[in-house]
Length: 216
Image 1 (tube, rainbow, N blue to C red):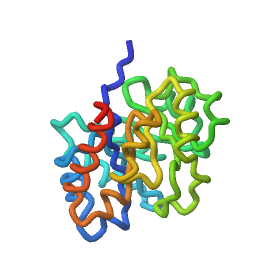
Image 2: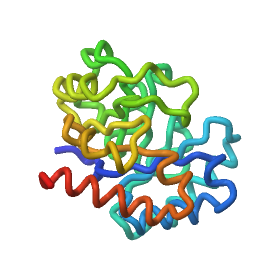
Image 3: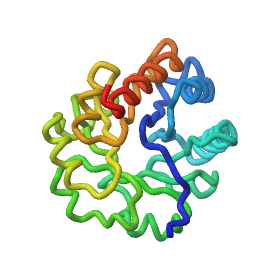
């Protein structure tokens, strides 16, 4: 039996330092969690280690007592130092087997998949969920791979033995179609971080996702 924590992949908030700068990271995350976010991924590819560690520790404290898990993007050292719930790696980061060895068996590990060809190499024993995308074109990540589209998402999700968290250009308008294509959840950046009211944006997304799951 896995010692890893249970997690809910339905609505993942991926933080963006530029979009949260004016309101503040903790305020945006706190409002989003109150609105229904179920997973938080701290992402800041340009932050110095000490700054990122402090941010991770603040978010860990903010999420204490909730069921919302904290994942750190790319930086396994920060995830470990902050006692985060896990880490997320991309195709060009530390390979999943090595990442799992460093994290141990009691933390979550997510892996980004941008093309179906990458699925065959995944060992589901070491990965807890897959970030699948971009589904649609997105400006949040300038170096993103070509969009999968809904058909590509459906084909990839059908081949996975793990929860697929779809990402890339997803909002309340297209979230139902994404969920119907086989996603276990969605991950958003600008749809919440760039919203005037992150809490309201999260509530709308969560209602949309839950309705799609229940067949509404």
